Picture 1 (tube, rainbow, N blue to C red):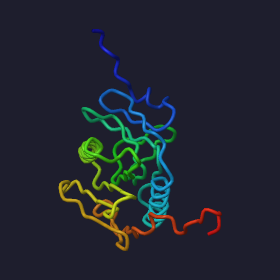
Picture 2: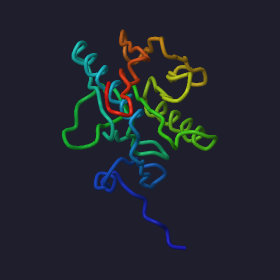
Picture 3: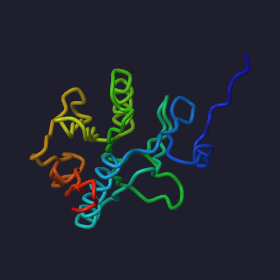
Length: 191
C-alpha cells in the first residue's frame, strides 16, 4: 500500500476555512451557530480590553492558527485565545497560546466528542498552554476552566458567576452572563 504524504503547515495555510493539522491530516471544522459564535466574540472582546490594559500579549479571535510541534499535532485554531509572544504577520503564530477557549458547537457532545476534547486539552497543555476554557452554551456548567497544573479537576462556573483564567491571565475576569445574548427578539423582530 503506498504511503500517503503527510500534510504540512504550508498545506494548512492554503486550506479554505477553519482547520487544524492533527496526525498528519488536515482536520476541517464546520462553521458554528449563533450562540457559540456570540460567546467567542464576547470573550475576544473582553480579552482585547485586558490586552490593552496590561500591554502584554494579544487577544486572538476565531480561525487564527497557532503552529506547534507535538508528535501528533502541528496546529491549533481555538475559538478565542490569548497569546504572549511576537506577532507573526501573515503567518501562523509560533507556539501555543497561554489561554485557549473552545466553545462547543452542535457536534461537540457525546462520548466521542468528549474524548476528542480531552485529547485536544492534553495537546494544549503539552504545547505550553496554561489554561483552557471549555464553554458549553447549553449546559448548566457553562465554563469549565482546565489548568495545566491540575488538568483533571476543572473549576466550574455557571450563570451568575464570574469566571477567570488564572494563572494565565492575572486579574482578568469575565461574567458568565456576558457569554449570552443580552436581549431576546420576539418572532416579530421587536426587542
